Amino acid sequence: MKTLLLLRHAKSSWSNPGLADIDRPLNKRGKRDAPRMGALLREQDLIPDIILCSPTVRARKTAKAVSEGSGYEGEIKIHADFYPGDPDTFIETFYSLPDQIDSVMIVAHNPGLEELLYVLTGESARMPTSALAQVSLPIDKWFELDDESGGRLINLWRVKALT
Image 1 (cartoon, rainbow, N blue to C red):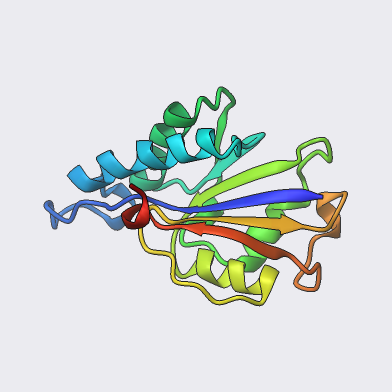
Image 2 (cartoon, rainbow, N blue to C red):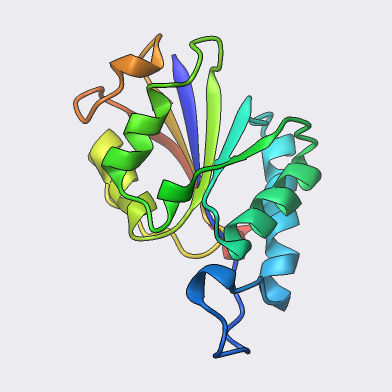
């Protein structure tokens, strides 16, 4: 059994219209929300074995804040092809993971994350910024993962619903 955590980056800033999309930082709300999701990971005992992240500034800052808030001490691995990201790209990335890794968190973007959630579970769900989905995968080896693996959406947390 493997666990996949899908985290949409925290709210980003549009205050500098001259910045390229990939360079947009987090805004004030994003800087507040990302550590809250890290604390949630810690509280739920869901600290991943590895974090895979989009190369955008907002995703990298989200991953860093979440990792600090959760107590994750591993490396955050940046994957250039996670921007913008699509289900096939994400799934292909999993194939190269060692099988002793049981829990993976992806920090990336919509619509790719919502599409991946649907492909793996058959469930459609809205993932606003900072949303975190927990997916259970009935596989023993990452190369077994495909769109017919029968993943199950266990939880979907939205930061606005947290108290």
